[in-house]
Image (tube, rainbow, N blue to C red; front, top):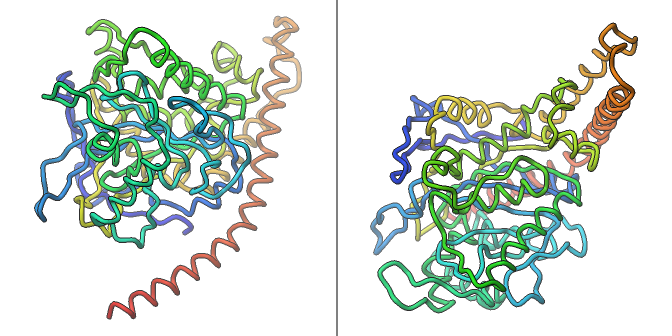
Length: 453
């Protein structure tokens, strides 16, 4: 089996106190709870140059003087996004993105992409960008490295040296009257929330490949948002109910054509009906990426947004590579509790959310690239085999536009099946390289184990 599964300790649904929404356990029997482990990224990186990852991250629980402190980070956790193909603009006076100058599979390369995170203490911008995937998720550490106070300080200094927070002004911390310095902001609020996420948090992501132009549309939306606050008269004022981290990321994807936007700063009743919660949004995107009804041409055609994106970009949300993954807290860790945590808010549609999460986190089609490719190849094949090219009595009453659109749809399905075929061939070649790397990793592990004994 190419992708291992790991138990989650306490995969729970918790309440968002400010809304009073109903909650429940995701899995009644924790011993049966499972989550996808990280599969080596080089395999996926080799087949996709442009994608977004929308991630829900848990609370964190620091160790203070050797003892565990109370959980922090808000009961619903936090949401972030990573964009492969959009990079931090190092020439800008405040956080902005630009197209990456080259495609690379090196997660530590700033030209790989950028992580985006909204922080409640930002005043003149909405989000900050982190260059490279390794710093954003792992703080530059490998799973073998010890996370202690000295290593933590090194990552703080790296972020400061990169000048990631240049041009950002901050609101005062709770209970204070003066805004913090950049260093104090990084040390107290940003590390572990805006970057180095796995230092203390479990991270669940939905990865969604998309055409370059769609990715750039999301990038342009994010830039315009920061431009508005940096150059306008109004400050950014985070609101947990009506303008939080999820609104920004959801609407960036809406700008790309993935789904419809969410209202920002809606009236309280409207905000409750259109609640934006990190884990629910992660589940919604994963479900859309795999369960969108590709098979129903008439339904696709009647969906104005989907049909427009299909004709413009040759893209529908359910496509090969829309995978779910879990990245656990770094386990060799002296600073944070290392138990896995994940928070999903059921709200008014609790049963739907929990059932979707259960399925997405346990079905190999959604967590393994090879199984996902087989799944889509079968779906595309069934659509093509069910195609009726003879003019039916219904089609005789259709206008020419309908028949043209029908040809567009089936041409898309055929091209997607051919794409899957090529990806499957490439995956077989990459698996050989993967096995060699895993064998090398096992030798390294054995050597370390012998040294410890």
